[in-house]
Amino acid sequence: MSEIVKLPVVYSIPGMDEVIVKSDLKYTQVNESHLLMDVYIPPHLGKDERRPVVLFIHGSVPAGSPAKNMGVYRSWGRLVAASGMIGVTFTHRLGYPKPRLSEAAGDVSTAINYIRANAASLHIDQGRICLAAYSGGGPLLSVAMRDPPAYVRCLVAFYAFLDIQQSELHRTYETPETVKGFSPITYLASDVSKIAPMFIARAGLDDIPTMNGSIDRFIREAIYKNAAITVANHPQGVHGFDTQTDDDRSREIIRGVLAFMKTHLGVTEAK
Image (tube, rainbow, N blue to C red):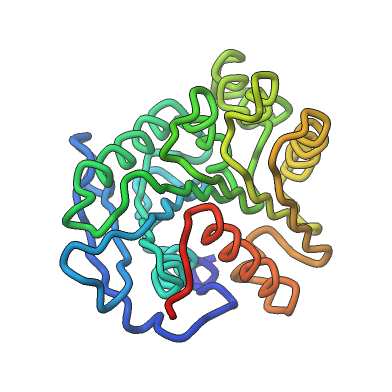
């Protein structure tokens, strides 16, 4: 397992080694030393130049784990920055086995407020934000779905829980009200036109209990409600396929989500 967490994304582009990284920023006043943020900035930006930002929301980890240091997030941060956007990775309080959903959601909101408040020094356009959640972090997309803010332009869910109402783990530790409130499928009952466009990546061989069922239910309901979703299925992909399934389909999906981010964040190619 220790080797798996070091694995980088199976796709790379030129310029990833030139990315500027501002590390271990204290984004919250919560007194837990591992709650830190890294910001990945494209090289050669002008002093006042601003770029849209992708905020990466990690999945469930044991309490105290510095999740932002995992290979997957380090490489996604560089990949996004080399693509012309700002990448932000941060450790929040989503735990395992106890999820701590409310605390983690508070950290996500605090992280968003931090990057918006410090937008100038971080070269961030505070009006163009994408939230990208992975695995157990999927429920935290609810932060931007309950009352969708205009500055969240798109959402991404990579092999992520989108309905935890059938998850025994979540039902064991959280109240029924919390479980429903942190199931993104709940917000498809409202006006879906207000929810930001969403890219959903599914791992066909995902072995996390109830994971694919949650994704499939969300997709069916989203299509029924005519929501703006893009779905990419990897038939041979395992959970964490972007680092563990090194094949052309993984790279195709990664290229696809980068294009999706750039389209919805308004990133234009340099002439």
